[in-house]
Length: 249
Ligand SMILES: [Zn+2]
Ligand SMILES: [Zn+2]
Ligand SMILES: [Zn+2]
Ligand SMILES: [Zn+2]
Image 1 (tube, rainbow, N blue to C red):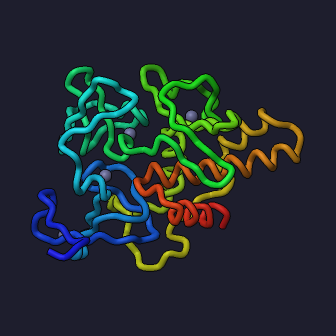
Image 2: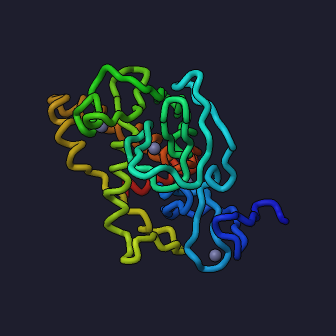
């Protein structure tokens, strides 16, 4: 077998090819969003897997859950949600039998620190400030979401809220069959809107001086872009830059 090609048990009839495309996809393993690098069926099945979903570890540990061992399962129990992003578990999952925690593979692998020039974002399980997207500390009753907080403490965003911004924008482009098409052209394949309505409202409350607001908005945009690249399972500078260019389009 050539490097970058695999046969996967979830799609055994065709080879999957590792490739990088500037289009979003639904991962057929964890059912979560993906962007950038992925394993794609070489036939036109529209079948995709995150790299980390294609070759998961049998067990993992996570620094946020000391003493817990997470086991990989292709199908989780029904009605479970991810303890990192608060979203439903619909496919591949890392599960801890001892405490009952569930993590999407892409959430389990979220980088603890994202750094880009002046911006440094740290992944936190508990936060003291409110998220700039939803205006809340806790996502919703009973469901928490991890957050990225900038080291200057200015910027706080739930992982769940960044996923929501992505979904809202991608959903508009979703074809009838519920799957994203994989088109060869990159232009307009992901039209993220620069003005997220909910985000604007929170921002207006935060700062009233126009100069400060502009600076803060710029910083927030960089933060969202970096977190987006991380949540889609490809936290590379290339993907972050690409998403940024699409946001600013
Ligand atoms: Zn996946
Ligand atoms: Zn196929
Ligand atoms: Zn998750
Ligand atoms: Zn939020």
